[in-house]
Image (cartoon, rainbow, N blue to C red; front, side, top):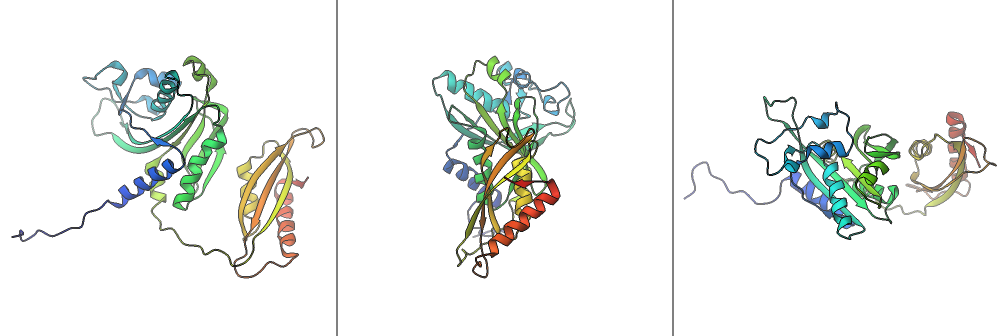
Length: 313
């Protein structure tokens, strides 16, 4: 018979396991294949990505009896493994590929060790090939955001191993959760790689805390949506993210703001550019009147003009 304190439990995955499985399934549906690498890397890998000497990633645990020198340090970052993965594939004739890895990094507070290091879950996503661009790879975090019902924003950033003009920090709920960018030309040249390599790094442990909320169902509107296109003349320094947020805050019925064109010419003016957006207005409780959308658009334009001096092209 059962012990007095024994009880029957039902099998199944934990909530964290369900979440990570959903994350992996989402990326697989987006065309990325899961990769599993060793939890170790080489000291040369930290030099390869040109980390400064005082970078926290250089504080790595050295194994007492490593298999080889190339596997002598516990990983403090996933980027080197992804770059090496792209290089191996390219040298074997695979000219394109999409991969991701959900794994832990090991970050000691100090060396030599006096306590266990922090084991932190990170998510690395990589794509390489002639058909890949910054924006095709940006689809990976976007599909994650859509699947889990959150929203990511992006701001210009810098990393020593990414191209300075193609690097963006990723934010969720005001917190920086990662960074993405194109591996710099210098690193690619050193590795004899001619194809572009793009990598997304996400702090999965931090992001996971924001994915706990239950998804809320929003019924499809019974009324027809309305669309408008706006071409706006802005300063060259204005980013798509900043302008999109400003437009979205101008009307509660706006459900989608997407950039579809960037144009520069002497007629627009030096230090200026034209950014064209497609706006989707979705009614919730009534059919839009014929002139109602025009009023919303004028309200948005008035706000943009007041805040940033933006004009309609």
